[in-house]
Image (cartoon, rainbow, N blue to C red; front, side, top):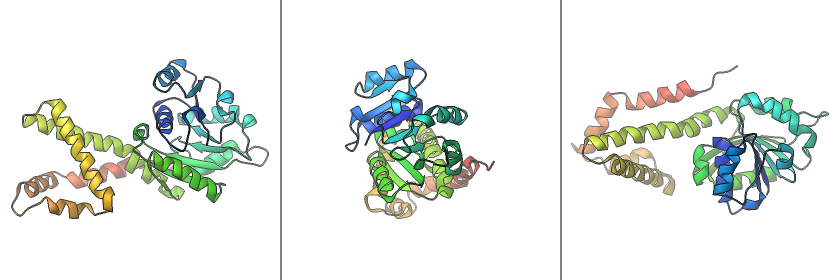
Length: 266
């Protein structure tokens, strides 16, 4: 499967680096374009087999999947440029443009009464390390196309095909969630420094602990509370810490932060 990525910003380049590690996509079958050559130079230095270009038309030539990775206000202009050259019968268009749903994409890419198979994608920046949680919603795609794209994005972490109504919730949990998890790591690291560790050692400890906690849940699908119970002894240190965090609004703050992040309807 050949991928063309339009846009080499943070998420576009992260996708390119992730795909380059995939077993289902050859590095030489990845193309990425951007109007700023300096962003492409970084990609060339890290992954010289990825094809880079400032010409969007050249980028999409021969691609199976054309991924749009740009700011929302650039989408319509890019679409108008690409539409004459897209093969609607054989090319998939997948947008990672936040807040632009499938109905908008249908309108933007309509050409003589036709639209290509469309996907709305929401990965997160951990896709560069093949640890993303990616959400996909499709319109006009076949079951085979759904399965093929799911397989690729599951290689880059994990992926779910969901109803479009859940895409904003996925955005908050997994994309905004990266920032929230990192803010927790920063706070925990600061606590580690207060207790005597160097900042580098404290961050190393906290990052590995987070990785371990996540692996416990992914290994067999256990519930967080069952894992918490294993390390929470009666009258012990852990329950004291948990209760102190809850008195200061730990769970409430997280839920309120998530709800505040949901994009508002137009």
